[in-house]
Length: 266
Picture 1 (cartoon, rainbow, N blue to C red):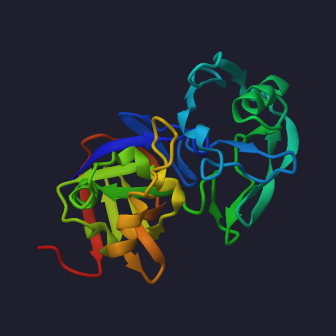
Picture 2 (picture 1 turned 30 degrees about the horizontal axis):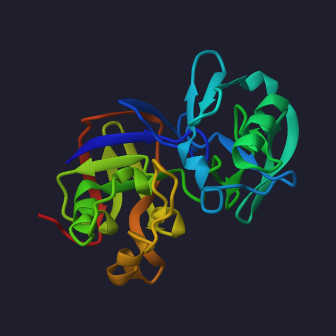
Picture 3 (picture 1 turned 30 degrees about the vertical axis):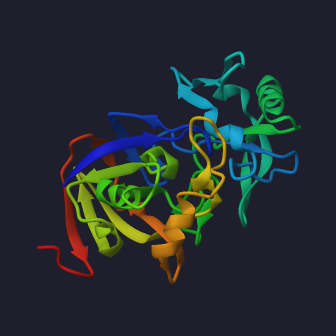
């Protein structure tokens, strides 16, 4: 088994950037989910309700400089040093503080989404922790998410029109497995980094939004199909959530080893 794809999503709900390598930190891949669009009260805005966010491409340049691009819009250039004002942030039930401050960035996203919003930066270090111990970015509830190519192939075999891996927004994609083998993993090593499998990843309406057009599928696919055969005690599941045991660098082609599993795949 090998690591076949790596994705970083700098802005929560934005288009994922395919990369060849990435640094692993306790809160996730470096640069992943470090930006968040919020309402004036700090509550999160995601593509579940604001579909156009999936068309935004966020890229880190150099020395804290960032750019945000979207179809038909002028490119936004900003810098992390402009974000110095403490601002309330809320991701689901998690409340913490992040950083605001670039009025031009707020205006750009407000124009793109058609309502008053603010852009928040996570900061050099997160102020958000799960269970008082696990540092988190603006991700939903886990630092990393992994899906196997075989699981996507199994799903696509049941769909009238295939979907891409981008529709599910993983960080890590692995090959040469059985379909849904990752459900049974407990402890894995990818290259030099070890991960605990924290949970299966439950899926929602976000999976029905086309990552290119930002248009939801009229028949709620692929979620409707997943509901027919991937409904587990936790919910409708596709992929697994991970927590890193150590820091390191992940590279495409890294070997994936299963160190502990609920079943044997020999």
